[in-house]
Image (cartoon, rainbow, N blue to C red; front, side, top):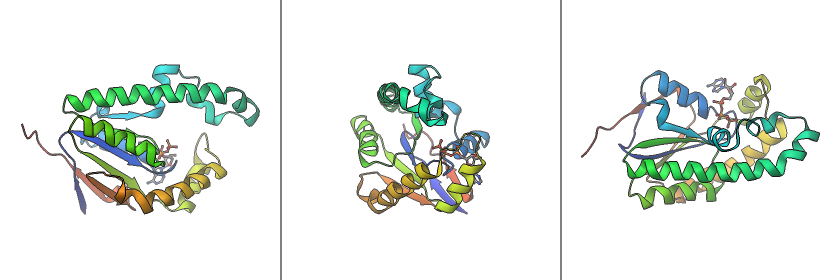
Length: 192
Ligand code: ATP
């Protein structure tokens, strides 16, 4: 059984396409009392906090409707990420550990979080969920609101670039997991 030691404070960046099981992993860690619910933030949660629930479901609307509210969604989304970063920065300064649940497929998104951690002098690690495309598509089809084959496939392409470059991102550690269920996360006690 592989074990990953979590830093006492700082940021854990989850990385993976839709359906890779990021939220599922966090639910499991909460159920196992490895983390508390408040130690995880997600882009969906912050979209809801700044823009009510109207924009969370944007991806599930029919194409015609979706196009109309796309610009608004983008605006709310940008503000949601700003608010999430502010919250992360505060938690880092208080020496808290925070997991971030979003796809993080683009280097600039990961870089922003690395900077937040650097400024607060706390570690930042990446936990990458590397699940085969076939499996992602099967899970998507089973979902109440499928993200759509095209979108998942596009994310997988971007994810391949991520896998090639993640080591150069500047994380203090990065872990690529092919079987996330088999990993145990171990917490470090307060060094202070
Ligand atoms: P998104 O970025 O779209 O929010 P995600 O990476 O957070 O996706 P989850 O919400 O955790 O993914 O899971 C997506 C779907 O895949 C859910 O229906 C979930 O039940 C299923 N799923 C997650 N992990 C597994 C697994 N290990 N085996 C089978 N199905 C899984």
